[in-house]
Image 1 (tube, rainbow, N blue to C red):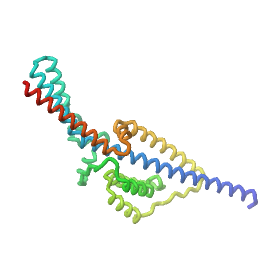
Image 2 (image 1 turned 60 degrees about the vertical axis):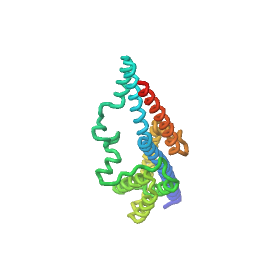
Image 3 (image 1 turned 90 degrees about the vertical axis):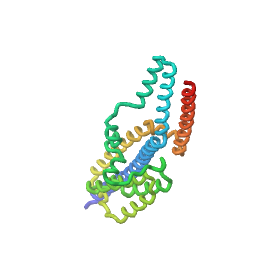
Image 4 (image 1 turned 180 degrees about the vertical axis):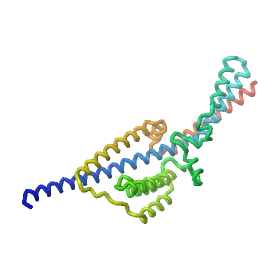
Amino acid sequence: MDSTSTDEAADDAAATARLEAAVRAAEGALIEFEIAVETFRIEVENFSRLHEQRLGPYYSRLEELDAQIAEAVAARTGDPEDERRAREARAAIMPMPQVADLFQGWLDSEGFSQEAYAMLTQQPVQQPPRVRPSDEARKLYRELVRKCHPDLAVDQNERDRRDVFVSRVNQAYARGDEDALRELADEWDRGPRGEEPAWERQEELYARLEWLAQRKDLLADAAAALEDSAVGSMLRMAGDDPDGMLAEIAEGLRQRVVEREAELARLRESA
């Protein structure tokens, strides 16, 4: 091989090495971005679930009290307008059943709810104890996902295996279950090692970079949708203490319930 051919081969190898480094860097950045998006998604879901669990009874009680107050006013005045308001207030808390209601809450916007799936698979239903898992759970989660992320696999079977495993990791993280995350980390370390990417042609590297860029765009759209949602906006407003925000809202609602109950009692006493 002459010196020209040797130089060309060296240049080609150097270019391939640079592309490989770019792919590795892009993979790492994408995984970090996806971890951040998934972490926020889990916190949004937990916030939504705990919001319904902790505040739902207050909202239901307030609606019932509003209806009773309107009915008490209508009974006292006999005014047709007051009677109309009373009917509307009562109708507002007795809506026509929707599809989800007919399935007794087993269906959500994405199909079977988490509770329904747990019942069908005979798994225990566990409400998240808090919106944001502990710092230790977050640390364990990030370290584990970096190891087992599906984007690090080449073979489709290996990607599928990792997808299933990451789903279990996400569920454990959503519960804030540090022990389960440690057990999953041990299970992963004991498990089979998937095939590592072995790029041999520059075309494959360029294709990989293009795929990573497209996936990043999809993740950016998902992140924007989460942030723009009503629950996501509330979670951002809560800052470092989303559970404290829920407690503060609950106390405000409790006070409103006390006020409505006192108002209803006065109306009934004056009847």
